[in-house]
Length: 498
Image (cartoon, rainbow, N blue to C red):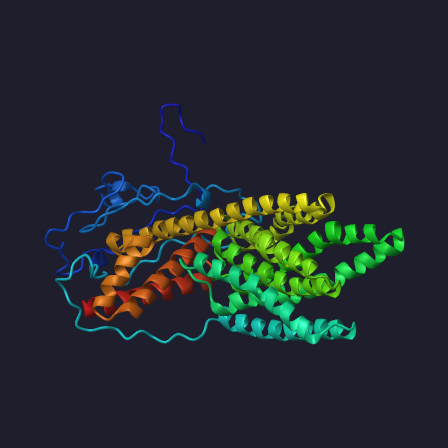
């Protein structure tokens, strides 16, 4: 049936875009909840709609919003990159579950303690002690297994080194030199991971995967390929070229990338975006470089020349210090972007093409040593690696900013339904607001509570984005409810101390 030309057409909306529903009327206006003296209404992008659900209609867009009785609606502009309504509707990219509207609070939330300190809460709900999440348990198990694997691998490398007639003390010195690069990479990643820190066991597993699983696999495969290439060509130079330029980029980036897939599936609750992928990828690459550098430094030591050892340390530990971290982190960034926009399954499957940028850069780096073997080649490599490292560090800054922006957008959705005040969104979703919130909490001895409030709010925002990408997964929805309950507990405890 078609409408006549003069008849208005009914609005069409994507099936996964439901308007955010306001809380029930009894939750919208708590008894005695009034605007603090001198407090000005907080509005962004003009005034919000004044009508209620019946006046505005059920088809109102989520981005337009709806003012709550006794409250205010603030429009948080969603980055176009993470708008889950504009995506293909294929079997892999569509949400796996039903749409996931923002859960509504069971009761009205109290005003922000730092926005108005005129009220006190007499009873503070004791925060429940939740059990250790399954991803954390699996992360510790994985870390222990990989730690044992690294111990076995280092023992084998040590025995091979000693059996060849080299000094055991030299091997220990080479391991110490190799650890310097890993410490620098870990330091950079710790700074990059401050906004929404990843769980410690998963971070440890990332380092150990690169140092044990990926390095051990690459050592065996590259050795076999080099031996086969020598048997076919009879030329040691050709075998070295095949092993370094062809086998190493493909084998090593694939082995490291598989670690990202494992961490993505084990810790999906925490692997929610490009910054998370960069963190895990860089740590995997740093762990891989640690084990690989031990073998390179040992080979240089066997040649007996101090200049050979020094040049190897400079090239691999100084000029190319971020090499493996950059290659694998690019894989993680791509996986994180796809997972944030299209969900879990596409995020895991994109691994098969996400390794290509890292493979290309890795191939170019190894190829440069064959194209420019002299001192001038060292200068060229220095300049190129310096530029690449600068771009990578700049990418980290951009991704941290992007993560904070998305946190503010997602928390704003909860504020529009009454879970938070908009002042709290600013406090939780900006660096300046977090500093001010911690300073305020420190004055009344509630700094641990504020830190927990900030950390769990960032996790709540990431969970919300995952629900939009995957749909209303029962586990993710239950986790969202748990975080919302803890958010309420944290707010009440802060208010009780104000």
